[in-house]
View (tube, rainbow, N blue to C red):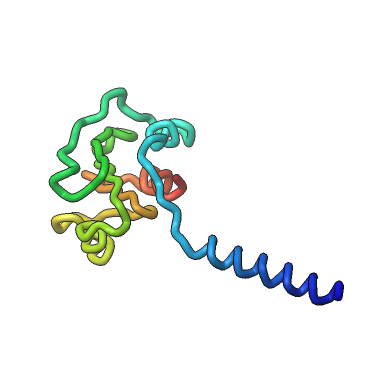
Length: 120
């Protein structure tokens, strides 16, 4: 009887782990500025407002990080526009970096910014 209980318990834990591990994490832009600072990047004090709703995003803004102008957008993963951007890995022809449901669009190149974004 003990063997049956152990097997049932292990099977239940396996199923529970498989179900919870399958869903990708949904991220927010709320702490990204602080994250950039925490990894040692210089972040300008002022965010630039972006019309994120026009591209179907939930949130978005511009920042200067390490002297590079960037745009950050947060999408619902099910949004049609997000699916298109994810498939093309570009927004209006400009390459983007994806991290879950977040998108980084850079005006210039900066490997440190991309790495910090991917770590977030």
